[in-house]
Image (cartoon, rainbow, N blue to C red; front, top):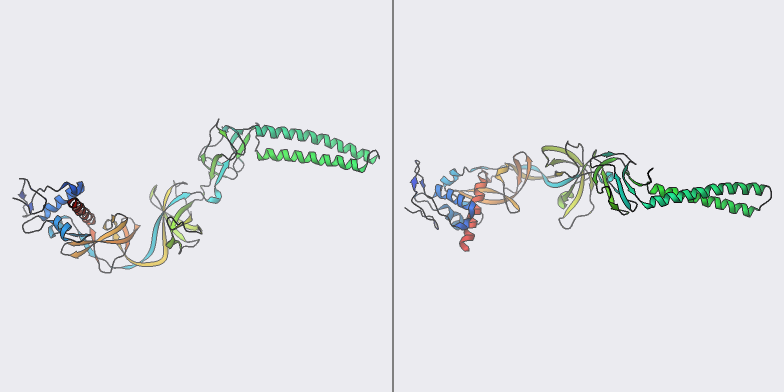
Length: 406
């Protein structure tokens, strides 16, 4: 006995189930793909009975693009459940990815101010530091030169101190003129200026008691990164240590231009974290960019976490839930009712007599297992269960068509 399904042949393993449904093993063209083989086999089992047209032929040849047609037995086998939707106002919102970071105003990059060789690294990533603490010591000839200049300037200063003292006594005795006294005082002021210059240079080089240059923390914070190790040669400007704050954290995200227009500093948002599923933190908008990135039509925004959850660190991935004052008509559905086709979300709507049509919609998660969907009309019969079966049937029939054309 042969089944009427086109492009399919049966072997001798034919049988009839107790409920009267005829079962036949089908040989499906290989172009339908591995997943299509299993799906079309299921379709053949449940819908190739006496007087019933083959389901794969109905889905690919008779049905328009984006439509799946199934027999009543196929609908039952796929456990498809539908219900009409009732639209209610829902707050418009969007979810954007973000990155946890230390506030810009609390970050610092400590660089080398000398050319030399690293002799000691005093901190590790994660260490708390205080303002002025030495983080890295660098041996440099610049420090030696500055120390020598200070010693020379101090010796000259001592000489000029004595010289100007003698000149004043001689002037009072009438032994020298006022001009000579003023010249000695000018030399004295020059020596003082040299001492101050040499001291300032040593301060700039952060000279340590060991005669090295010490890279100091400009503010209190936490060490994020250490870029050097002992023995490494460095030049002025080379980065040594990255600092920041972990007491207060920001989430940086790029908000779509249309959503950014309705946000203002102080607005509250919810933030979720990939490393802590189920954790929801409150944050407020503290900075909004003043220009739109032309590559993705978005605006950079920074949100300050009101409370930093345990385990959340700079660099953690986050998702920012942005709600606006705008409202849209939509419906709440189970997340399995929404399927993905390429770059768009879609649901299947029932049109009667086993006919199901794909419909593009907008969706966003609202809580565990539930999504808010917009783009539907009041009373639309939506597939709540079995949407993934319909998606697979549609993709399999599309693949079979492409194979047939090839």
